[in-house]
Length: 134
Image (cartoon, rainbow, N blue to C red; front, side, top):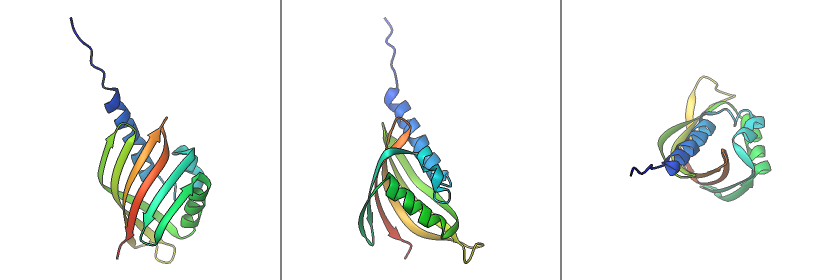
């Protein structure tokens, strides 16, 4: 008798990682109207930043992205580590920007460690810790 093994947790893990990587590689911070492509409408973010603790829901996070889009000509995340288990994805990354004032120079603005929870192909929660480049 042969036993068939399914690898559903690994497939779920890979799919969740793909969603998060796609979000981090996107231009959503420069095009906030695309946020719903990656985030559930029930999204929540818990962010421990050097300036204090913040909570965001979908609409508040969208406003943050809109504010960001007014300050930078480009923004990219450089991922140094990404691991996943089922619907949870942990990522360590650096965010680099080009400012409107100096569009030819890319500078790091912060270092992040985030745990994303993905459900049905959308990000539903982020627990994040960050500190500025200094």
